[in-house]
Image 1 (cartoon, rainbow, N blue to C red):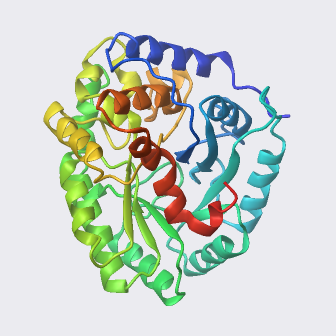
Image 2 (cartoon, one colour):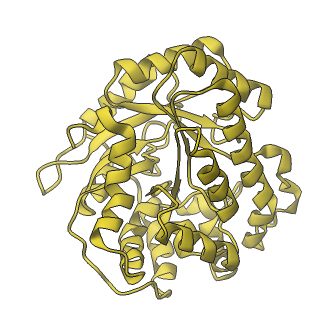
Length: 357
């Protein structure tokens, strides 16, 4: 049985929610429909002090989420068949919730510059129904990260040569534009200066270019998009590429101003929260159906990890899921439009992998 994460992790969540509850985000709404969360960090393994697969599954079940896609920047990272099997064994140890079940568990396999690893990872997507796709971190995240453009191009070329038809999900920030010297933990909003808007815009532009020149046949997915300019790049690429993008609850519900409040450092995330003008436009794009789906990017840490060096990035965003549903409803979006963002659009792209949902 998976051990529950310790009180510090729960305390971090409670502190964040206290701040969130002070903000008005539409009327309360209970939407009884199925959802899929295609982007969670279940931690577990050597990071079980943060959370574990069983705990995330329980939260998801209570929200009506019928499937979760776990990211590979775990400790240890998910890179090989051995890693996949170990991770699936952890998932099998989940105890059913009081409702009698839990969401279907899927996972991504991370990519490295190693050609043999890339080829074997692509094979895992083909051979394991629960391996949902491949994940490329164009900027470092945990022990994963392929920041050199030559290595990124190599990944695309190899996948194209393999006739890879699955999902390639990308964290598309470009480290070339990072400015870590601007970070001041006493002024948490300075984190947004260290990873400026251009790092995402040019990161997204790069991935689209690499997909084009390599003739990638799979679906390129840009994770946790934060800027309307990035969405415009994705929309422009749809004419000749299979490409999608997702947005998180926190990048829609909050602006960087929340980081100026007490305990604002708890909202340090990658990519960072943006200014009001960008968030307003991003919200408009979401209402207009220009963004493919909602993905939580649930990334818990303990309170100590958030408040002490190195002030880790990420929040337990699954707890914001009811809030984003409420917000969508407050924008006069129909049940059908909401379900497209939280279920149908995801199911259409992942097709065969989700046929039983």
